[in-house]
Length: 353
Image (cartoon, rainbow, N blue to C red):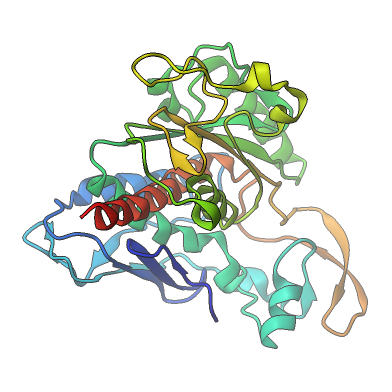
């Protein structure tokens, strides 16, 4: 199976399945001497872990990371960092009923066609549980990029969304289970998710992310543009269906005279429709992008589908599932953004030596 590694210089390879013994990863390229704050990494994992609130899956995993290499006396050594997160609360019997059934909009059919075999227990490698490893890698990237901040937050659930002119309170984000930096909108979104869950259904949403402190000059022209790599990173996250940066799709309705970011004398820009990236290279302005997540494919409702013999059957989801992935996706978006920036930072340092 290819495609398990992300990055060129700051490189993360992950392994493991949702209902296997463990998940894990190897992080290569992290420079020596980076102070590793294990409490910070644990906090990042806690923001993603299951069972954290009434609106997430009730699977109970501590998601404690065990480091086996690359760290000595609290600092990175420059060698590969190996880590493992053990699974402790699998209920694989919850998936016995789909052993020979293709769930609608899941990877069951495509994995079967590609490999001739699939791990039906929670989706195996296609499960979003794999993203725990990305959060570990992203947390270490953040520790390396100590002067750059990453702030992602929920901006929309279903049809409820934050307006551009609504004030955001960063401190509010971690005070509510939806991770919205706005108390009133958080309550509205939480009520919607609970209603959807009672109906046995699911709902999608949008996560916005801001990166501050990034110097001008990161990114490579043509095929490895900064925003192209951010787009690849976000689209690699489970359930992501869309990515836009800066003005995004709204740019299609604007004139150039409206959209151009005019320079100030200090080389900042008066507007930021570019989203902090021009010509594929950071321009020193904050990077703004948005990521759209589809509704979770597992429903607690009966659905028509087919089995592995192409016979029509009726199935219904069982077990523990998120009615909306967006609240737990917030730290994953930050982690993938940090991995992208760390990779470009190392590339820039190599280029300028």
